[in-house]
Length: 108
Length: 119
Image 1 (cartoon, rainbow over the protein chains, first blue to last red):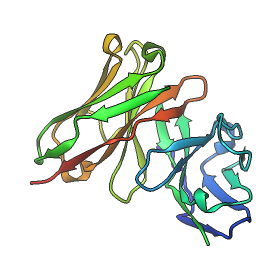
Image 2 (image 1 turned 60 degrees about the vertical axis):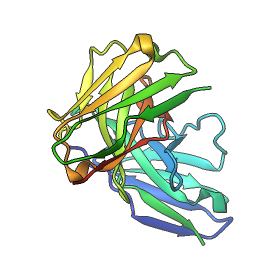
Image 3 (image 1 turned 120 degrees about the horizontal axis):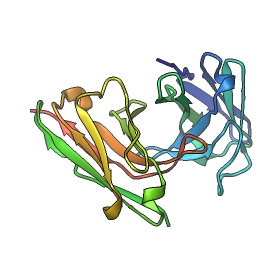
């Protein structure tokens, strides 16, 4: 089955840029989506189709995808960005949805 | 306003069964595929099942096949997940999520319902 690998944690100072990677075999050929999950809450879609933002999501959230790595970038990080972030794809080979292992973002 | 509200969770003994429900409102339920995703305590998100608008396409995570059954009632704007032969490792918060077919993403989620499997 398809595997998506994320770093367990990323730490960033307020105002700086956080980059969260999502590794998968030839992930650049897939459409990648990103979710933010604050403690005790449901996930929220923050980036879809590699780099598009849903309505209401700040421009500080952006995404890219190429080769074997997709990346979620959070610019000008704020305390409220502290959360777990998950990447997700649809694996056409197995007709399964797959989530990444998740990354905890800590704002120092 | 799109709303998804799960119910039916609770404490169940190992080997027992439970039926989860997800009540949808604020959108045309019959026009969207729907999914179940779960999250064990302190763990990541795990996709469980997907059901198409008319229930003609149903997909399950390999580890769920045979124990879990997803269904829907478009007339009642409701999604269901039947959980059988429950094990301690099925303890989790179960979320329902609306799928966008064009992007294969989940644009709206419910708040989840907790299932605890313990004797």
